Each structure stands twice: as structure tokens, then as C-alpha cells.
Length: 63
Image 1 (cartoon, rainbow, N blue to C red):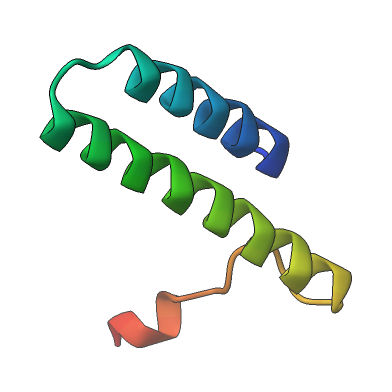
Image 2: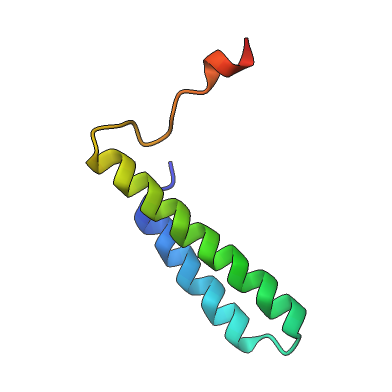
């Protein structure tokens, strides 16, 4: 299972890729992905700190 630390590491890797990209559109896309990984990691950490599950159980939504 991927951890929030893994997500943050991947976010930093994305930023490195974005820095090396010569194409502005590609750079923006990669930066959006980096922000999403960081935002997701933070949201999960906040949820866990509040006593919640790391990922909500969505099985009931399938019914």
C-alpha cells in the first residue's frame, strides 16, 4: 500500500521532472500532478489525525 510519505516523495520527483521539461504545457501538467499528490497526502494525514480511516470505505456506494 502506498503511504503518504510515498506520495510526498513522488510529488517531489514530479517537481524535478517539471523543472527539466522544456515544454510549458507539459511542465504545468506535471506540476498539477505534483500538487495533487501533495494535497492527497495532506488530506489523508488530516483524516487519520482526526481518528478516521486512511481511505473511506466506499463499498456501500456501489449498492
